[in-house]
Amino acid sequence: QSALTQPASVSGSPGQSITISCTGTSSDVGSYNLVSWYQQHPGNAPKLMIYEVNKRPSGVSNRFSGSKSGNTASLTIYGLQAEDEADYHCCSYVADSTLVFGGGTKLTVL
Amino acid sequence: EVQLVQSGAEVKKPGESLKISCKASGYTFTTYWIAWVRQMPGKGLEWMGTIYPGDSDTRSSPSFQGQVTFSADKSISTAYLHWTSLKASDTAMYYCAKSLDSSGHDIDSWGQGTLVTVSS
Image (cartoon, rainbow over all chains, first blue to last red; front, side, top):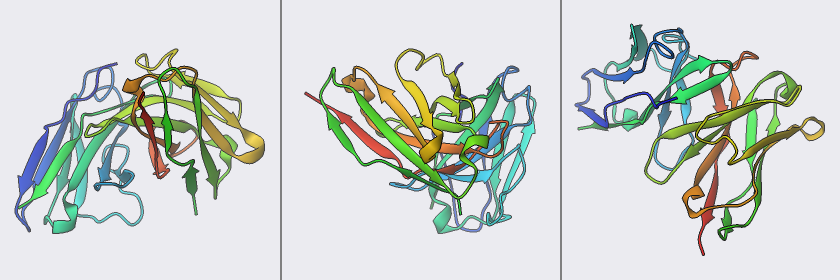
């Protein structure tokens, strides 16, 4: 399976909103509502931010929102804050308990 | 509280074998999948494969098939990732991670990572 496609980098100013896309195929993103998003600060392990396209785990800010259209999933962060600066990785279920990640997107808060 | 505690950093030579571990606590080890994820220096995450400790059922990414082995010891709630012959290209951070539920569709909790350096 090929990696999902994410932009290498995005940026925004504090208070603004940004959206990170994650494009797959009809065999992964397009077939299942099983896309998750992870935030990773430098030197740390990833942290689950969104699962099953648009669900937030307990404790994750409601400024983080997920959606999907066709073969492309998106993560939107509203009201950007300095602590949101991190790498973001999307992940999709493929089939038979297998997963595939995107290449990761570096978010810079200007 | 769910915890995944991984073994410490390793420095090995090409051709050597290695087994790293991931000790789970705070949940029923046998009813959730444990995935292994590679992150090469400065790169993104790569799903390597997963194991269901309840029956040791495994799945592998085609990219890692035959290159590594996944195992688990239910008696001590520990999962393992094993190489028989390391290459320099295996240098990376390796994370274990627990599935959100028994289906294995998502990952929720992560270990702290084990840095593996392979150099002659």
